[in-house]
Image (cartoon, rainbow over all chains, first blue to last red; front, top):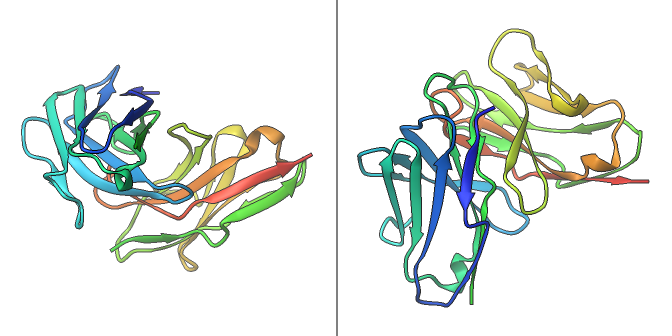
Length: 116
Length: 114
């Protein structure tokens, strides 16, 4: 199956700083990637759709200025949590679907963000 | 809008016993349905999916699920579980075209006891 890699797997940052999370499709091109957020013992919630070469589409209630998404190439999307606060601590997961196989989403390993 | 309800937040089962994890969905249009497994601090792995055709879907690790349109259900089953099946299981429905945008259920924590 297709492989999606996320980096870093864990990050601890101080409150007020920014953190960048990378999501890469290793063996396929993805014009669209998706970012999810998972709070402890809860489900995954779609945050935004990352579109290669254009602006991301954010779900209702997600602050676009806080969660900056850049999809600069067909294999890389980045999520930057700006001015992080403890309430931003969460598990962030990206997914992507190969262009020719639109019936399965492949997920990255996830990034555990802890803001102290 | 689509939504997914997993009726059990936790399911404890003895090893080698059968298990069923329940999932109900709501949608005004035809959907794709999925079951994913998540091991601690890891991403999601696809167990199986229903796109169309046969309502009984077989997946990896001995899991299967049955799509029931009249009951809007997509329950996951395994006839005999192993310790290694201990994980969080998520049912999901597609929100848009294909499998791209997914709406997840709350998750079911499956615990296998020896």
